[in-house]
Every structure is written in C-alpha cells, then in structure tokens.
Length: 548
Image (cartoon, rainbow, N blue to C red; front, side, top):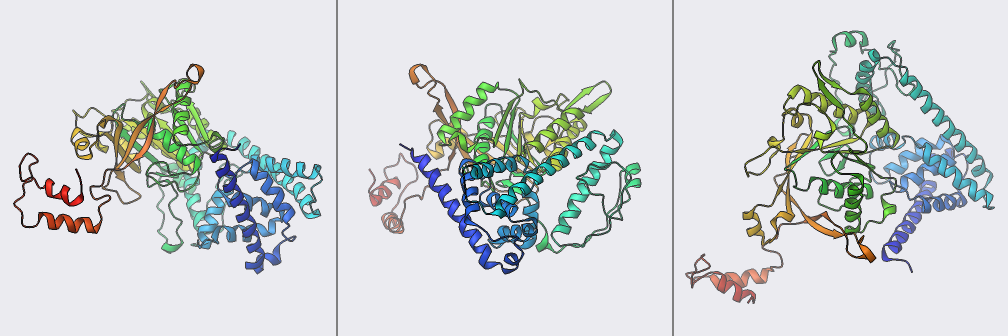
C-alpha cells in the first residue's frame, strides 16, 4: 500500500509530465520561427524516455530541467530560441528570460551523465528511438566530455595564477559580470574587447575597452562614467527567501543564545531545499542549502533535521542532494585569524569554501554561529569588517546568499534589536539585510493568552537595504517532535522544531451581524472597563454573542 504522501508525489509528477507534453506541443504550434529551425521534429518517444528518467530523478526547478534536455536532443541551433520561449511563456520579458537562462545553465555535467545513462538504458532495452535521438546521445556525450575538459582546464589555469593576479581578477569579475548582464539584456551594445595582459581562467572574458587595468592595479581606483539603462530592462534582484536572503549578498540574524536561532535556520533550510513555504517567508525557488554549524556535533544536527522533517512531513527524497550539512567540530572553517602582525584572511579556507560552493551549486550558505567561523577580536571593527567582506566576496563570486547567525550582547532584559549585535558594528554594516529574534515577553503572553511564552519567538526586521523594512513582526512556535528512536520504537529523543504561529486576531470569527448585536447591547449603558465592576462591559457583549 502506498502512503498518502507517496500518492501525492506520484500525482504531482504525473501532472508535471503532462505539463511537459503540453509545453512541447505548444512549442511546435505557437512558435513558427522555432519550428523552422528545429533539426528534427519533436518525437514523443524522446519525451517518454526523458519523463521516465525524471520519474527517478525529479527535476529540482520544475519543467525547465526537462526542457533543457529536450533542447539538447534537437540540436544547438534551436537551443536559444526554445530556451527563451520556454522561460518567457508565462509573460516574462525576453531580457528577463535571457538572464534567467544564463543563470540556469551552469554546470550540468553530472546531470548530463545521468541522462546519458538513461538514454543508453532505454536503447539497450529496445526502445524505439528515432535516428535523431540516437545521434543526439552521441552529441550529448561529446558535450558533457567537452564541458568537463573545459572545467578541468579552467581549474588548472586558475591554480597557475600568482597572487598579484588575484586582486585584479576579482575587480574584473565584479565589473564584467555587471557589464555582460546588461549586454545580455540588450540594455547596452557589446563593445570591442582587449587583453589586459594578466593570466585569466578560460571562463573569464577580458573587460571592454575603456577599463584601465594598469592604473586600477596601481591605485585601486577607477571612476566609471554613468550610463543610463532603461529601468524596465534592468534584471530583478534575485531573492531566494522572503526579502531576507538574496544572491551575492550577506544577511544577518541576531538573537540571544537559546532563542531558537539554529532551530529556525533548520526549518528555513528545509523550506528552501523543498521549495515549500513552511514558515512565513516565501521561497522564491527551490535551493541547494549548506548548513554549517560550529557548535553541535553531526549526530545532534541529524536529530534536529530529522525531527523538523518529520514534523513538517518532508520525505527524505525531497531533500536528498539539496541539503548539505557539516559540523565545525568535524570540519572547522576559520576564515580569518589575528596574530601580532595583524588580521589575515585564510586564503586556502576562502578558496576551498568558494570551490565547494561552486562544485555543489550551493544557493544558500548558513554560518551558525558567526563567531565559530573566525578567530579575530569581535570588538575590532577593522578585523570584523575584513571577515564580513570576505564572506561578501565569496557570495559575490559564487552567486550564492550567505546567512550569518550571530549572538547578541547582553541587553539587561531588554528586547534585542539589530544594534545589539555582539561586538563590532562593522558586521551589521556589511549585511544587506538583518533581523532579530526575541522570546515572547510576559506582557505579550498575557495579551495573546499564551501559557508557555518561552516557546514563542518574535522575528523583526532589523535592517533592510534592498527592500522596504517591515514594521510587522512574524512569529514562530517551538514545538516538540519525538524521533521514536527509543527502545522498541518508544518516543525516544525529543527535538525542537520551528513552526508557523500567528498572533491571535480579536475579530476572528466575528460577523457583521455579531458587531451590530454588540453595538445594540452596549448602546446607552453606563458600562465600566474594569472586569471587577458590576457594570463590566464584557457582560452585555457576552450575552449578545451567546458566550458563557
């Protein structure tokens, strides 16, 4: 017998499969220029093979993974037109589709290898693949091999760079990414390019003429003339989780120890990995998430993640290959340290972190807590600024979002705000978004009718550089979840799980008729607000609403 969740997953995949067939059919009928350019007609045999493949390897970003492989089967000439159509069929502009496609097409070597195996298996079992599909298998093999060779060549050349080239490359990468994005969006024309005389990896294109690399290396300063770009053609910010986590930026969470920071980040990691909205913030796309916890051992992290997954009914296959977890006890990651000579970034650690994020296509990195990832003085603004900007640099060059989880200083019983971030203020300055967590106060518990206030946590915006700052708090409730890991399947260990909680609405369930009845009941009376008074106003209200 299949469980309800298995049946639901089956129906979802079935719906995705039908959507793919509909999409391909629309591509044949709705886009005549594309149909004219296709190397071969779209065949349903190829669709069936690919759908069977994705039944075993569910697509992580929906229909576009399957659309990608369909395009690979029908020749490179159709790739651009089909990709732009597939991305823009929901009304997105062509420029947005192009930028989204450029982001999506990163590093498909591993998936290509799986697809080759699937097509080989179908062919070996006598699947009736047309000649075009058989030829496409070889094309796919060649493409995968070429991409792998290019990657190894780029890595080899990158290893050969000397330290003098590193700074120049970083400046070039930052500027050229912006330049080529605007070119891809059609906002500005492409300009002639020239070599800058510094060894570059094979995947780096020299900047356009007009960028004086020599003077930039010497002085580190280059003024760039402003070029007006039509606002409607600018790429949108790449938010990943609510208006808190965004690609190429650092975000910060500040709270007292024991407020539930790690519990919250685990629930958010599961939400992003599955693409489900488990708490209050929207998940803009399914993400690959790397949780690095510097305090708990790996077995405790496994308990906490398993408990959260059980509570939110997340089967393990939904997060397999999408959630990465490491403990600082087993895998320390000290990115900077201070000696008598001053504060120094551990370049091997930075390089290894960057390489790991790229190799696994990580979208979000969570560093919990921040203090475990460096060994500099927390009160040294220059040192903390160096550490924070190192993480910002990693986020920028890898295209991921980095979430730093930080302790607050002692507040004498007052609520924590962003300014209570422990140590130097440079950390808050480097973060583009910051939020705070506070356990529910006794007054709040009385107003909300909550008995256990320590299980309720308020989350507030503390800083918002890239989106309007919200003045409304969101709340989570820390629920308990048994793991059933005791003897004979007993309840066993219990772990805390972050769940969504909303402040009670005094008007919930009240109809317009109820309001009229209450107004009539209290009209003209000499009622008192004090609950101890004989003429307490609550009495006629209760009678009007039929309450005991």
